[in-house]
Length: 604
Image (cartoon, helix red, strand yellow):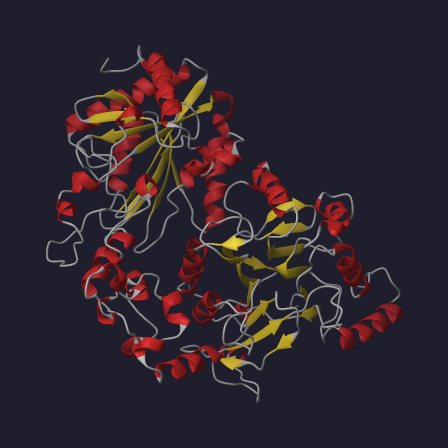
């Protein structure tokens, strides 16, 4: 049976009015059959042709109040004092009191890990943060939360959120339902639209696209998608309780794509139109190049010509082509489809370096900062030829933060990371510019083992066990083996919490147990494929968890840290940027750890 979903426009904090309306159109199964049929028949004409009771409510547009007067009633629901009658999902994470409520939500232990299916605010209320894709009663649901911004605050999506959904467009399978706060540009005649959303919808190609924030109800005719057989239906919903009595609640009962035959999926209603986004592009092509429409600047992230003398449009690199190796605009694209730049990206070179000529992210960037082929002619600066000058971990680099170093050996050194997870969080880093710690010389492996044993014993003296993890990838230029202490009493939980987090992300960790850590290292060295990549964790009991990266797989660089943050009940420290402290405070942490490590340091 197809799921029954309620869709709602901007609630604006009017949850009391919304949920009363929901309850009025969701008759209880305990009612007499004749009464339930009567209520449902009335609902057909008022909301849609789909009958309740319903499986979920999905809200688009602004969820929180726009004035303090509505806050008390809103908090009754958000804080669990009033009952929410149906599982409710929202994306419009802005308005009065949104930062306070959502900050507390993000810190809850049950919301740690990778929860693209919603962070639980209270019973039956789920926040869809950032962007993501999940399955709801068999339906594939993609979402983008908030409005466009560069600062990543609540209620604002970032370029990273947009890029994540672009990556989803490359996944197999059709998205049943896509939801955003804002109406996309070109789908209606409104000038208050978001061109980023237009580009995303054109790539994701959902069967149903739901949006709000315009204060009106708008149902567009189904339209064709480029390079896909199915059509998309767009629905814009009005605000809850709007004065003009515009429709704010709509019922939908779509059959999941996974259960449809090809002929059912490709069926086209008589009123189907051409794709509105393609039509807009065609109109733009007829204009002069100096008047290219705004969608170009949204689709192609960097205008290189502004940073180069005598730069022309032909010198701009196509962002889509560099990232994926293809571009839906084909020969009509105004930007370079440079095969060498694409190859540099494929080998893990930083996109900012390729396209802008400079990386501005600093140590948080995990991509390579030197070109991998001397034949590439787009080197922005001559010093990029010397990899150590651009590497954050090379001791000879001017970028290295030497005040974080706690010990230096012959082949490795130990340092505290920027924004450490806990005070004793340590990185073991090769002095030589090596991409991983799995392809070492016998001497290098021996020294690494001495450092690992020293850290194990140091942590053990404080009642902790050591967890080691490393991401081996083409995108990691200089290896860093991360070591985090966890209380010995919680170490037994490690295998399960890592495996559950991996499943949330859609991959599995291979589990092997060894009686000796050196045997585990030998196993990892055999598993490692230089052409692909590997993420691995070494646990205190000799268990090794590993995942071999598939070609072009984008693995979450902070996966190990985020899992441990959940285990240690410090979710607010999952992102290292939340943990940055002054250089003076960092230096004090280093001195404190040196004292603890002194008797265990193999090079003291």
